[in-house]
Image (cartoon, rainbow, N blue to C red; front, side):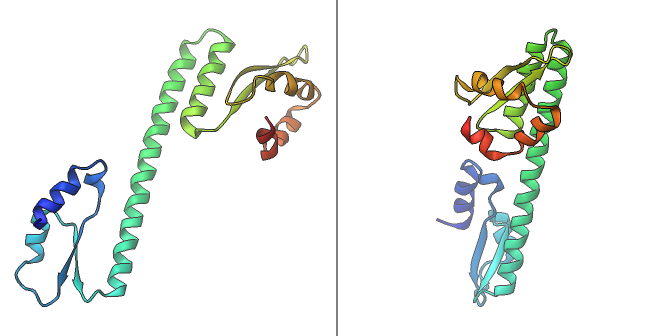
Length: 168
């Protein structure tokens, strides 16, 4: 393999275009210039013997670029989910449709193992599980008896306890 073939093969793989390819060269070898290596597709060059500080700087820049790329992708997905949720809620006519769209947005944005949407009728005091996913079939009936006795603040405090979800 020559450098151009190697870089082309790596770039053709899934995730390859975002892969940083570094050429390792002998510091005394003058047959290839940095410009030639760049035209072959290498992103950077490290000369042997390797300078530890140079490697540290290179790894740090790759980590920062990876974080920014990931954050940008997350923000794009969030924006898309929120746009879809806003449109879905605008066209929904029932509380059940609202609940379905809200849970779909939670599922898309957070990828939880399970979630439930509970509604409390303020006048009647009735509490019901409108929608859930990833929880046992018995969860709504078991949880409803306890939820009927809770105030809004108690609901929030209970929801922040990880063992509540694990026991669901």
